[in-house]
Length: 529
View (cartoon, helix red, strand yellow):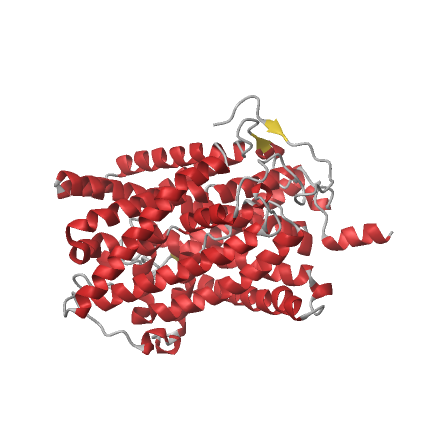
Protein backbone atom coordinates (compact mmCIF):
# COMPACT_ATOMS: atom_id res chain seq x y z
CA UNK A 1 0.00 0.00 0.00
CA UNK A 2 2.72 2.47 0.92
CA UNK A 3 6.02 3.05 -0.78
CA UNK A 4 9.44 4.13 0.38
CA UNK A 5 9.00 7.35 -1.55
CA UNK A 6 5.90 8.38 0.43
CA UNK A 7 6.33 11.93 1.59
CA UNK A 8 5.81 13.63 4.91
CA UNK A 9 4.23 17.02 4.46
CA UNK A 10 6.28 19.99 5.58
CA UNK A 11 4.52 22.00 8.30
CA UNK A 12 4.86 25.68 7.57
CA UNK A 13 2.09 26.79 9.92
CA UNK A 14 0.82 29.12 7.17
CA UNK A 15 -2.51 29.06 5.46
CA UNK A 16 -2.59 28.73 1.71
CA UNK A 17 -5.16 30.35 -0.59
CA UNK A 18 -7.21 27.13 -0.83
CA UNK A 19 -7.56 25.83 2.68
CA UNK A 20 -6.53 25.99 6.28
CA UNK A 21 -3.30 24.01 5.92
CA UNK A 22 -2.44 22.24 2.65
CA UNK A 23 -1.24 18.71 3.35
CA UNK A 24 -0.16 17.57 -0.10
CA UNK A 25 -3.49 16.16 -1.28
CA UNK A 26 -4.55 16.56 -4.92
CA UNK A 27 -5.95 19.97 -5.82
CA UNK A 28 -9.27 21.01 -7.48
CA UNK A 29 -10.34 17.49 -8.44
CA UNK A 30 -13.89 17.27 -7.01
CA UNK A 31 -16.97 19.26 -8.07
CA UNK A 32 -20.50 19.37 -6.61
CA UNK A 33 -21.86 16.48 -8.71
CA UNK A 34 -18.84 14.29 -8.02
CA UNK A 35 -19.12 15.06 -4.30
CA UNK A 36 -22.83 14.17 -4.25
CA UNK A 37 -22.09 10.85 -5.98
CA UNK A 38 -19.41 10.03 -3.42
CA UNK A 39 -21.72 11.19 -0.60
CA UNK A 40 -24.63 9.00 -1.73
CA UNK A 41 -22.21 6.13 -2.24
CA UNK A 42 -20.82 6.55 1.27
CA UNK A 43 -24.30 6.50 2.83
CA UNK A 44 -25.04 3.52 0.55
CA UNK A 45 -28.87 3.51 0.63
CA UNK A 46 -29.25 -0.09 -0.59
CA UNK A 47 -26.81 -1.48 1.98
CA UNK A 48 -27.96 0.86 4.77
CA UNK A 49 -31.63 0.05 4.34
CA UNK A 50 -31.20 -3.71 4.12
CA UNK A 51 -29.13 -3.81 7.31
CA UNK A 52 -30.66 -0.87 9.20
CA UNK A 53 -34.37 -0.81 8.39
CA UNK A 54 -35.17 -4.05 10.23
CA UNK A 55 -33.66 -2.98 13.57
CA UNK A 56 -35.56 0.34 13.41
CA UNK A 57 -38.82 -1.53 12.73
CA UNK A 58 -38.04 -3.78 15.70
CA UNK A 59 -37.85 -0.71 17.94
CA UNK A 60 -40.74 1.47 16.72
CA UNK A 61 -42.92 -0.59 14.34
CA UNK A 62 -44.84 1.47 11.77
CA UNK A 63 -43.49 4.72 13.24
CA UNK A 64 -40.31 4.30 11.15
CA UNK A 65 -41.20 7.25 8.85
CA UNK A 66 -41.61 9.45 11.95
CA UNK A 67 -38.26 8.29 13.31
CA UNK A 68 -36.59 8.96 9.97
CA UNK A 69 -37.90 12.52 9.98
CA UNK A 70 -36.77 13.03 13.59
CA UNK A 71 -33.31 11.70 12.75
CA UNK A 72 -33.17 13.86 9.64
CA UNK A 73 -33.80 17.16 11.46
CA UNK A 74 -30.75 17.24 13.78
CA UNK A 75 -28.59 15.94 10.94
CA UNK A 76 -29.75 18.79 8.71
CA UNK A 77 -29.28 21.35 11.48
CA UNK A 78 -25.76 20.14 12.26
CA UNK A 79 -24.99 20.18 8.56
CA UNK A 80 -25.34 23.98 8.58
CA UNK A 81 -22.69 24.13 11.28
CA UNK A 82 -20.44 21.92 9.15
CA UNK A 83 -21.00 24.22 6.18
CA UNK A 84 -20.07 27.35 8.15
CA UNK A 85 -16.98 25.75 9.66
CA UNK A 86 -15.85 24.43 6.29
CA UNK A 87 -16.27 27.86 4.72
CA UNK A 88 -14.06 29.32 7.44
CA UNK A 89 -11.55 26.43 7.67
CA UNK A 90 -11.60 23.98 4.73
CA UNK A 91 -9.37 21.42 6.41
CA UNK A 92 -9.46 17.66 5.79
CA UNK A 93 -9.40 17.07 9.56
CA UNK A 94 -12.99 18.43 9.75
CA UNK A 95 -14.44 17.56 13.20
CA UNK A 96 -10.97 17.06 14.68
CA UNK A 97 -9.61 20.38 13.42
CA UNK A 98 -12.76 22.38 14.09
CA UNK A 99 -13.37 21.09 17.62
CA UNK A 100 -9.71 21.77 18.42
CA UNK A 101 -10.04 25.32 17.16
CA UNK A 102 -13.23 25.83 19.17
CA UNK A 103 -12.55 23.99 22.42
CA UNK A 104 -8.86 23.11 22.49
CA UNK A 105 -6.75 20.00 21.79
CA UNK A 106 -8.30 17.54 24.26
CA UNK A 107 -11.88 17.83 23.05
CA UNK A 108 -10.66 18.17 19.47
CA UNK A 109 -8.71 14.92 19.77
CA UNK A 110 -11.80 13.07 21.00
CA UNK A 111 -13.90 14.48 18.16
CA UNK A 112 -11.33 13.14 15.72
CA UNK A 113 -11.25 9.79 17.51
CA UNK A 114 -15.05 9.56 17.39
CA UNK A 115 -15.01 10.13 13.64
CA UNK A 116 -12.18 7.71 12.94
CA UNK A 117 -13.50 4.98 15.24
CA UNK A 118 -17.05 5.13 13.88
CA UNK A 119 -15.97 5.12 10.24
CA UNK A 120 -13.58 2.23 10.81
CA UNK A 121 -16.36 0.37 12.63
CA UNK A 122 -18.69 0.80 9.65
CA UNK A 123 -15.99 -0.28 7.21
CA UNK A 124 -16.03 -3.71 8.80
CA UNK A 125 -19.82 -3.78 8.64
CA UNK A 126 -19.82 -2.80 4.97
CA UNK A 127 -17.33 -5.52 4.09
CA UNK A 128 -19.41 -8.09 5.96
CA UNK A 129 -22.60 -7.16 4.09
CA UNK A 130 -20.70 -7.31 0.79
CA UNK A 131 -19.57 -10.83 1.70
CA UNK A 132 -23.10 -11.94 2.65
CA UNK A 133 -24.55 -10.75 -0.64
CA UNK A 134 -21.68 -12.19 -2.64
CA UNK A 135 -22.75 -15.64 -1.50
CA UNK A 136 -26.46 -14.82 -1.89
CA UNK A 137 -25.84 -13.65 -5.46
CA UNK A 138 -23.81 -16.79 -6.27
CA UNK A 139 -26.64 -18.92 -4.87
CA UNK A 140 -29.17 -17.13 -7.08
CA UNK A 141 -27.01 -17.35 -10.21
CA UNK A 142 -26.07 -21.01 -9.71
CA UNK A 143 -29.48 -22.06 -8.40
CA UNK A 144 -28.03 -23.61 -5.24
CA UNK A 145 -29.45 -22.07 -2.00
CA UNK A 146 -26.78 -23.87 0.06
CA UNK A 147 -24.13 -21.49 -1.31
CA UNK A 148 -25.73 -18.61 0.59
CA UNK A 149 -24.99 -20.45 3.84
CA UNK A 150 -21.25 -20.35 3.20
CA UNK A 151 -21.16 -16.89 4.77
CA UNK A 152 -21.72 -18.63 8.11
CA UNK A 153 -18.35 -20.40 7.89
CA UNK A 154 -16.29 -18.10 10.10
CA UNK A 155 -12.85 -18.50 8.50
CA UNK A 156 -14.26 -18.08 4.98
CA UNK A 157 -16.31 -15.06 6.02
CA UNK A 158 -13.29 -13.37 7.60
CA UNK A 159 -11.08 -14.17 4.61
CA UNK A 160 -13.45 -12.72 2.01
CA UNK A 161 -14.16 -9.71 4.25
CA UNK A 162 -10.44 -9.01 4.33
CA UNK A 163 -10.21 -9.25 0.54
CA UNK A 164 -13.06 -6.75 0.06
CA UNK A 165 -11.45 -4.34 2.52
CA UNK A 166 -8.06 -4.61 0.83
CA UNK A 167 -9.50 -3.89 -2.64
CA UNK A 168 -11.42 -0.87 -1.30
CA UNK A 169 -8.28 0.46 0.36
CA UNK A 170 -6.30 0.05 -2.86
CA UNK A 171 -8.84 2.08 -4.88
CA UNK A 172 -8.97 4.76 -2.18
CA UNK A 173 -5.18 4.91 -2.15
CA UNK A 174 -5.26 5.75 -5.84
CA UNK A 175 -6.95 9.07 -5.04
CA UNK A 176 -10.31 10.83 -5.35
CA UNK A 177 -10.34 10.75 -9.15
CA UNK A 178 -10.24 6.96 -9.14
CA UNK A 179 -12.94 6.96 -6.47
CA UNK A 180 -15.29 9.15 -8.53
CA UNK A 181 -14.89 7.02 -11.65
CA UNK A 182 -15.69 3.83 -9.75
CA UNK A 183 -18.72 5.32 -7.99
CA UNK A 184 -20.83 6.75 -10.84
CA UNK A 185 -22.14 3.47 -12.21
CA UNK A 186 -22.41 1.84 -8.80
CA UNK A 187 -24.61 4.61 -7.39
CA UNK A 188 -26.83 4.71 -10.47
CA UNK A 189 -27.42 0.95 -10.37
CA UNK A 190 -28.43 0.82 -6.70
CA UNK A 191 -30.86 3.75 -7.10
CA UNK A 192 -32.41 1.99 -10.10
CA UNK A 193 -32.84 -1.26 -8.13
CA UNK A 194 -34.38 0.55 -5.16
CA UNK A 195 -36.77 2.39 -7.45
CA UNK A 196 -37.82 -0.92 -9.01
CA UNK A 197 -38.42 -2.39 -5.54
CA UNK A 198 -40.59 0.57 -4.46
CA UNK A 199 -42.74 0.58 -7.60
CA UNK A 200 -43.18 -3.22 -7.55
CA UNK A 201 -44.19 -3.24 -3.85
CA UNK A 202 -46.68 -0.38 -4.15
CA UNK A 203 -48.23 -1.76 -7.34
CA UNK A 204 -48.66 -5.16 -5.69
CA UNK A 205 -50.38 -3.59 -2.67
CA UNK A 206 -52.59 -1.43 -4.91
CA UNK A 207 -53.73 -4.60 -6.68
CA UNK A 208 -54.70 -6.21 -3.38
CA UNK A 209 -51.56 -8.29 -2.90
CA UNK A 210 -48.73 -8.23 -0.40
CA UNK A 211 -47.73 -10.37 2.57
CA UNK A 212 -49.44 -8.26 5.25
CA UNK A 213 -50.65 -5.19 3.36
CA UNK A 214 -51.06 -2.05 5.46
CA UNK A 215 -52.80 1.20 4.52
CA UNK A 216 -50.43 4.17 4.61
CA UNK A 217 -51.70 6.58 7.28
CA UNK A 218 -50.55 9.79 8.94
CA UNK A 219 -50.06 7.78 12.15
CA UNK A 220 -46.87 6.40 10.61
CA UNK A 221 -45.45 9.91 10.88
CA UNK A 222 -46.47 10.43 14.54
CA UNK A 223 -43.54 9.85 16.93
CA UNK A 224 -45.87 10.02 19.96
CA UNK A 225 -47.39 6.72 18.86
CA UNK A 226 -44.14 4.89 19.67
CA UNK A 227 -44.39 2.35 22.50
CA UNK A 228 -41.95 4.15 24.84
CA UNK A 229 -39.35 6.90 25.05
CA UNK A 230 -36.63 4.25 25.24
CA UNK A 231 -37.87 2.61 22.04
CA UNK A 232 -38.10 5.99 20.33
CA UNK A 233 -34.58 7.05 21.35
CA UNK A 234 -33.18 3.69 20.24
CA UNK A 235 -35.00 4.02 16.92
CA UNK A 236 -33.75 7.56 16.37
CA UNK A 237 -30.20 6.49 17.23
CA UNK A 238 -30.46 3.81 14.55
CA UNK A 239 -31.95 6.37 12.14
CA UNK A 240 -28.89 8.55 12.70
CA UNK A 241 -26.84 5.64 11.40
CA UNK A 242 -29.05 5.52 8.29
CA UNK A 243 -28.25 9.15 7.45
CA UNK A 244 -24.64 9.07 8.50
CA UNK A 245 -21.94 9.36 5.84
CA UNK A 246 -22.71 12.65 4.12
CA UNK A 247 -19.77 14.28 5.92
CA UNK A 248 -17.37 12.37 3.66
CA UNK A 249 -17.93 15.12 1.08
CA UNK A 250 -16.61 17.63 3.61
CA UNK A 251 -13.46 15.63 4.32
CA UNK A 252 -12.60 16.05 0.62
CA UNK A 253 -12.63 19.84 1.01
CA UNK A 254 -8.92 20.28 0.31
CA UNK A 255 -9.43 18.37 -2.95
CA UNK A 256 -12.59 20.26 -4.02
CA UNK A 257 -12.71 22.69 -6.92
CA UNK A 258 -14.09 25.33 -4.54
CA UNK A 259 -12.99 24.22 -1.03
CA UNK A 260 -15.16 26.73 0.79
CA UNK A 261 -18.45 26.21 -1.10
CA UNK A 262 -18.49 22.86 -2.90
CA UNK A 263 -18.58 20.61 0.22
CA UNK A 264 -21.49 22.46 1.86
CA UNK A 265 -23.62 22.48 -1.28
CA UNK A 266 -22.90 18.83 -1.97
CA UNK A 267 -23.73 17.81 1.61
CA UNK A 268 -27.16 19.48 1.50
CA UNK A 269 -28.01 17.90 -1.86
CA UNK A 270 -26.82 14.50 -0.62
CA UNK A 271 -28.92 14.44 2.53
CA UNK A 272 -32.13 15.48 0.72
CA UNK A 273 -31.66 12.82 -1.97
CA UNK A 274 -31.17 10.20 0.73
CA UNK A 275 -34.21 11.35 2.69
CA UNK A 276 -36.44 10.95 -0.37
CA UNK A 277 -35.08 7.46 -1.08
CA UNK A 278 -35.49 6.33 2.53
CA UNK A 279 -39.09 7.47 2.86
CA UNK A 280 -40.08 5.83 -0.43
CA UNK A 281 -38.46 2.48 0.41
CA UNK A 282 -39.73 2.46 4.00
CA UNK A 283 -43.32 3.21 3.05
CA UNK A 284 -43.23 0.54 0.31
CA UNK A 285 -41.80 -2.06 2.73
CA UNK A 286 -44.29 -1.39 5.52
CA UNK A 287 -47.21 -1.27 3.10
CA UNK A 288 -46.27 -4.65 1.60
CA UNK A 289 -44.97 -6.65 4.58
CA UNK A 290 -46.33 -4.99 7.71
CA UNK A 291 -44.41 -5.17 10.99
CA UNK A 292 -45.33 -8.67 12.11
CA UNK A 293 -42.76 -10.85 13.84
CA UNK A 294 -43.33 -13.96 11.73
CA UNK A 295 -42.84 -14.90 8.08
CA UNK A 296 -42.04 -11.97 5.81
CA UNK A 297 -43.05 -9.39 8.43
CA UNK A 298 -40.56 -6.53 8.72
CA UNK A 299 -40.56 -7.07 12.51
CA UNK A 300 -39.46 -10.70 12.29
CA UNK A 301 -36.13 -11.01 14.19
CA UNK A 302 -34.93 -13.48 11.55
CA UNK A 303 -35.23 -10.71 8.94
CA UNK A 304 -33.45 -7.99 10.91
CA UNK A 305 -29.95 -8.21 9.49
CA UNK A 306 -31.00 -8.12 5.83
CA UNK A 307 -34.59 -7.16 5.07
CA UNK A 308 -34.09 -7.12 1.28
CA UNK A 309 -32.67 -10.65 1.27
CA UNK A 310 -36.11 -11.74 2.46
CA UNK A 311 -38.47 -9.35 0.66
CA UNK A 312 -36.84 -8.72 -2.72
CA UNK A 313 -37.82 -12.12 -4.18
CA UNK A 314 -41.56 -11.98 -3.35
CA UNK A 315 -41.75 -8.32 -4.38
CA UNK A 316 -39.52 -8.28 -7.48
CA UNK A 317 -39.86 -11.88 -8.63
CA UNK A 318 -37.09 -13.02 -10.98
CA UNK A 319 -35.67 -9.50 -10.95
CA UNK A 320 -34.73 -9.89 -7.26
CA UNK A 321 -31.25 -10.65 -8.47
CA UNK A 322 -30.98 -6.94 -9.31
CA UNK A 323 -31.42 -6.12 -5.63
CA UNK A 324 -28.76 -8.63 -4.62
CA UNK A 325 -26.38 -7.07 -7.12
CA UNK A 326 -27.33 -3.57 -5.94
CA UNK A 327 -26.66 -4.37 -2.28
CA UNK A 328 -23.38 -6.06 -3.12
CA UNK A 329 -22.32 -3.06 -5.21
CA UNK A 330 -23.70 -0.62 -2.64
CA UNK A 331 -21.77 -2.10 0.26
CA UNK A 332 -18.62 -2.51 -1.83
CA UNK A 333 -18.91 1.04 -3.19
CA UNK A 334 -19.54 2.49 0.26
CA UNK A 335 -16.66 0.47 1.67
CA UNK A 336 -14.41 2.22 -0.80
CA UNK A 337 -15.86 5.76 -0.56
CA UNK A 338 -16.15 5.64 3.24
CA UNK A 339 -12.42 4.87 3.36
CA UNK A 340 -11.91 8.53 2.37
CA UNK A 341 -13.14 9.91 5.69
CA UNK A 342 -10.99 8.13 8.27
CA UNK A 343 -7.90 8.22 6.08
CA UNK A 344 -8.06 12.02 5.73
CA UNK A 345 -8.87 12.58 9.39
CA UNK A 346 -5.99 10.31 10.40
CA UNK A 347 -3.80 12.23 7.93
CA UNK A 348 -4.74 15.54 9.56
CA UNK A 349 -4.20 14.20 13.06
CA UNK A 350 -0.76 12.98 12.01
CA UNK A 351 -0.03 16.28 10.27
CA UNK A 352 -0.80 18.26 13.43
CA UNK A 353 1.05 15.63 15.50
CA UNK A 354 -2.01 14.63 17.51
CA UNK A 355 -0.92 11.07 16.66
CA UNK A 356 2.48 9.84 15.41
CA UNK A 357 3.39 11.86 12.32
CA UNK A 358 4.07 8.73 10.27
CA UNK A 359 0.32 8.89 9.54
CA UNK A 360 0.84 12.19 7.68
CA UNK A 361 2.58 10.46 4.78
CA UNK A 362 1.20 11.22 1.32
CA UNK A 363 1.62 9.13 -1.83
CA UNK A 364 3.65 11.34 -4.21
CA UNK A 365 2.03 9.66 -7.22
CA UNK A 366 -1.66 9.66 -6.22
CA UNK A 367 -1.63 12.59 -3.76
CA UNK A 368 -3.61 10.56 -1.24
CA UNK A 369 -3.00 9.39 2.37
CA UNK A 370 -0.89 6.24 2.30
CA UNK A 371 -0.18 5.05 5.84
CA UNK A 372 -3.56 6.39 7.03
CA UNK A 373 -5.45 4.38 4.41
CA UNK A 374 -3.56 1.21 5.26
CA UNK A 375 -4.16 1.75 8.98
CA UNK A 376 -7.92 2.20 8.44
CA UNK A 377 -8.16 -0.99 6.38
CA UNK A 378 -6.17 -3.18 8.77
CA UNK A 379 -7.98 -1.88 11.85
CA UNK A 380 -11.39 -2.40 10.25
CA UNK A 381 -10.55 -6.02 9.43
CA UNK A 382 -9.27 -6.79 12.93
CA UNK A 383 -12.24 -5.03 14.56
CA UNK A 384 -14.76 -7.00 12.53
CA UNK A 385 -13.05 -10.27 13.40
CA UNK A 386 -13.30 -9.40 17.09
CA UNK A 387 -16.97 -8.42 16.87
CA UNK A 388 -17.79 -11.57 14.90
CA UNK A 389 -16.15 -13.75 17.53
CA UNK A 390 -18.09 -12.02 20.32
CA UNK A 391 -21.50 -11.92 18.63
CA UNK A 392 -23.32 -13.90 15.97
CA UNK A 393 -25.32 -10.72 15.35
CA UNK A 394 -22.26 -8.55 14.75
CA UNK A 395 -23.98 -6.52 12.02
CA UNK A 396 -26.89 -5.47 14.22
CA UNK A 397 -24.64 -4.65 17.18
CA UNK A 398 -22.17 -2.60 15.13
CA UNK A 399 -25.06 -0.63 13.60
CA UNK A 400 -26.41 0.19 17.07
CA UNK A 401 -22.92 1.14 18.27
CA UNK A 402 -22.39 3.30 15.20
CA UNK A 403 -25.55 5.28 15.91
CA UNK A 404 -24.16 6.15 19.32
CA UNK A 405 -20.72 7.17 18.10
CA UNK A 406 -22.09 9.23 15.23
CA UNK A 407 -24.33 11.13 17.66
CA UNK A 408 -21.19 11.86 19.70
CA UNK A 409 -18.95 13.38 17.06
CA UNK A 410 -21.69 15.01 14.95
CA UNK A 411 -23.15 16.57 18.09
CA UNK A 412 -19.74 17.75 19.24
CA UNK A 413 -19.07 19.31 15.83
CA UNK A 414 -22.41 21.13 15.88
CA UNK A 415 -21.69 22.61 19.30
CA UNK A 416 -18.14 23.49 18.16
CA UNK A 417 -19.61 25.56 15.32
CA UNK A 418 -21.77 27.49 17.76
CA UNK A 419 -18.89 28.25 20.11
CA UNK A 420 -16.35 29.05 17.39
CA UNK A 421 -18.66 31.62 15.78
CA UNK A 422 -19.94 33.10 19.05
CA UNK A 423 -18.77 36.62 18.14
CA UNK A 424 -20.77 36.60 14.90
CA UNK A 425 -24.05 35.00 16.04
CA UNK A 426 -26.24 38.02 15.48
CA UNK A 427 -24.54 39.86 12.64
CA UNK A 428 -27.64 39.15 10.53
CA UNK A 429 -30.54 36.70 10.28
CA UNK A 430 -28.47 34.16 8.31
CA UNK A 431 -25.68 33.96 10.89
CA UNK A 432 -28.24 33.78 13.72
CA UNK A 433 -29.66 30.67 12.09
CA UNK A 434 -26.61 28.95 10.61
CA UNK A 435 -24.03 29.85 13.26
CA UNK A 436 -26.19 29.74 16.35
CA UNK A 437 -29.73 28.33 16.43
CA UNK A 438 -29.63 25.43 13.94
CA UNK A 439 -26.25 23.88 14.87
CA UNK A 440 -27.03 24.44 18.57
CA UNK A 441 -30.35 22.60 18.41
CA UNK A 442 -28.89 19.85 16.22
CA UNK A 443 -25.73 19.41 18.26
CA UNK A 444 -27.44 19.38 21.66
CA UNK A 445 -30.13 17.00 20.40
CA UNK A 446 -27.52 14.53 19.14
CA UNK A 447 -25.45 14.72 22.33
CA UNK A 448 -28.58 14.19 24.43
CA UNK A 449 -29.51 11.21 22.28
CA UNK A 450 -25.99 9.85 22.73
CA UNK A 451 -26.25 10.08 26.52
CA UNK A 452 -29.73 8.52 26.68
CA UNK A 453 -28.90 5.64 24.34
CA UNK A 454 -25.52 5.00 26.00
CA UNK A 455 -27.27 4.49 29.34
CA UNK A 456 -29.88 2.22 27.76
CA UNK A 457 -27.24 0.16 25.95
CA UNK A 458 -25.71 -1.03 29.24
CA UNK A 459 -28.67 -3.41 29.41
CA UNK A 460 -27.61 -6.77 27.90
CA UNK A 461 -30.99 -6.96 26.14
CA UNK A 462 -30.17 -3.84 24.10
CA UNK A 463 -29.54 -4.45 20.39
CA UNK A 464 -29.24 -8.13 19.51
CA UNK A 465 -29.08 -9.22 23.14
CA UNK A 466 -25.36 -10.00 23.05
CA UNK A 467 -23.32 -9.15 26.11
CA UNK A 468 -19.98 -9.71 27.80
CA UNK A 469 -19.41 -10.97 31.37
CA UNK A 470 -22.65 -12.96 31.03
CA UNK A 471 -23.43 -15.70 33.53
CA UNK A 472 -27.11 -16.31 32.69
CA UNK A 473 -28.70 -16.89 29.29
CA UNK A 474 -32.46 -17.12 28.85
CA UNK A 475 -34.40 -19.77 26.95
CA UNK A 476 -34.51 -17.40 23.96
CA UNK A 477 -30.71 -17.26 23.87
CA UNK A 478 -30.64 -13.66 25.15
CA UNK A 479 -28.19 -12.63 27.86
CA UNK A 480 -29.89 -11.89 31.19
CA UNK A 481 -26.94 -10.19 32.87
CA UNK A 482 -23.57 -8.70 31.97
CA UNK A 483 -22.82 -5.56 29.96
CA UNK A 484 -24.45 -5.03 26.59
CA UNK A 485 -22.10 -5.46 23.64
CA UNK A 486 -23.43 -2.26 22.05
CA UNK A 487 -22.26 -0.29 25.10
CA UNK A 488 -18.84 -1.93 24.97
CA UNK A 489 -18.48 -1.34 21.22
CA UNK A 490 -19.39 2.34 21.49
CA UNK A 491 -18.67 3.88 24.87
CA UNK A 492 -15.88 1.36 25.38
CA UNK A 493 -14.17 2.43 22.17
CA UNK A 494 -14.55 6.09 23.13
CA UNK A 495 -12.99 5.30 26.53
CA UNK A 496 -10.11 3.60 24.71
CA UNK A 497 -9.66 6.86 22.85
CA UNK A 498 -9.18 8.70 26.12
CA UNK A 499 -6.41 6.28 27.09
CA UNK A 500 -4.66 6.62 23.71
CA UNK A 501 -4.99 10.40 23.91
CA UNK A 502 -3.27 10.53 27.29
CA UNK A 503 -0.48 8.24 26.06
CA UNK A 504 0.06 10.47 23.01
CA UNK A 505 0.06 13.60 25.18
CA UNK A 506 2.83 12.14 27.34
CA UNK A 507 4.92 10.90 24.42
CA UNK A 508 4.45 13.89 22.10
CA UNK A 509 2.90 16.90 23.83
CA UNK A 510 3.32 19.49 21.05
CA UNK A 511 -0.27 19.26 19.81
CA UNK A 512 -1.70 19.33 23.32
CA UNK A 513 0.29 22.48 24.06
CA UNK A 514 -1.29 24.22 21.10
CA UNK A 515 2.01 24.36 19.19
CA UNK A 516 0.84 22.62 15.99
CA UNK A 517 -2.83 23.69 15.91
CA UNK A 518 -3.86 26.59 18.10
CA UNK A 519 -7.33 27.31 19.38
CA UNK A 520 -9.18 30.29 17.96
CA UNK A 521 -8.87 32.04 21.32
CA UNK A 522 -5.10 31.55 21.43
CA UNK A 523 -4.80 32.84 17.88
CA UNK A 524 -6.77 35.96 18.75
CA UNK A 525 -4.57 36.58 21.80
CA UNK A 526 -1.44 36.27 19.67
CA UNK A 527 -2.86 38.63 17.07
CA UNK A 528 -3.81 41.16 19.75
CA UNK A 529 -0.35 41.09 21.26
